[in-house]
Length: 106
Image 1 (tube, rainbow, N blue to C red):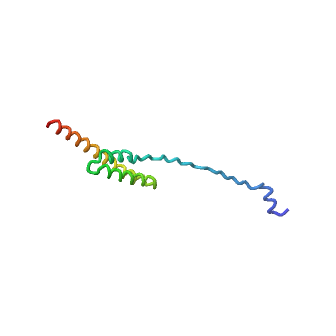
Image 2: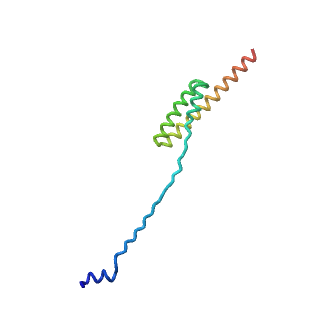
Image 3: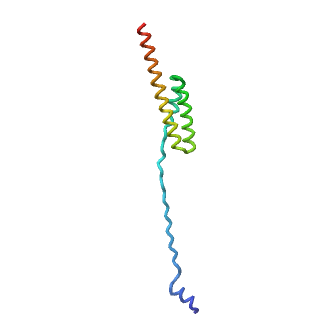
């Protein structure tokens, strides 16, 4: 036998050890509220100085950013929409209270 074949016989068949590992990363899906329903309600019923309409526009922008995958932009627009909705709600209720008080005094 040639020398090379003897080495193969002595060493045996080559052992191929492969270990396959799979790593799965589960990233939590961040839910960003876009306040579209609240903005639509304020636009239809409590639209003090068009704050409800502007809030609705920001809510739609927030929803668009969320669909694209830009969570930071979606959160920024949603925060602005929330502030505008709160302002619209506050000023509309304040106006209603003032009107009721003025009518009651007469």
